[in-house]
Length: 266
Image 1: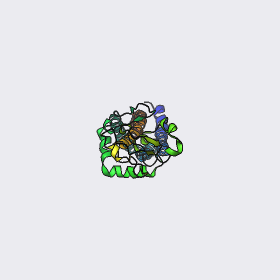
Image 2 (image 1 turned 120 degrees about the vertical axis):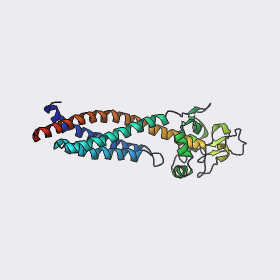
Image 3 (image 1 turned 45 degrees about the vertical axis):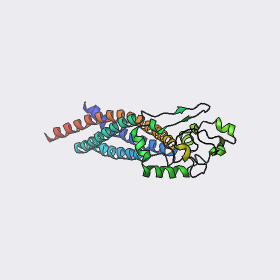
Image 4 (image 1 turned 45 degrees about the horizontal axis):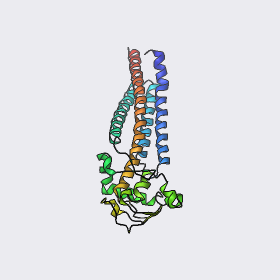
């Protein structure tokens, strides 16, 4: 890489990483506006990653601008750690989100979800009593189930609705239970359930109970988490490719800075 190219690198490589950092932070902000407090587990880590990239890019920018080799070493070392971390996270994210999907139910336009279909990591997190109690209390306070009677005024509208995974899993009993729906928030529990699924006994019409203790509710939460992790994993993959290119160019800039310093010493 010649001196002209090196000058270009000094002026622009870290400016690019700063723009990337801002893009990562903006992505985290976007996630926070599209998910409620119950289901935005990756928002803060994404914003933290963006802030960290912004910090080290400032170090790299100063090192490149002043032609300080030691600062470029620090910049590249931290950027290398970020690349390794992003790569590990991306691989794991694709592995744990590879399993789990909805099941079509005859007569319904939406799908139902089964917890056993999802990865062992998701099941472990959701079956942890402390984790689920926090998420459960958050779901109770949310308006997912409360909004159903407002959105669907009668039983016909409710049966034709396309429910979200949380609405399908937490706000109603599984279809296999066979409870007749009276409206969007009330089921006739006087009928004996036709399934041995424990969720059938756990469901109550009470606003504070519903099916929040059911595996079907945990499966709905798992589906939301899967989608969130998959979006972040795709974003992380793109970020890795771009940062790897920046890292390579940054290595060239550091090598030129070291060469320039050596020439001046001689």
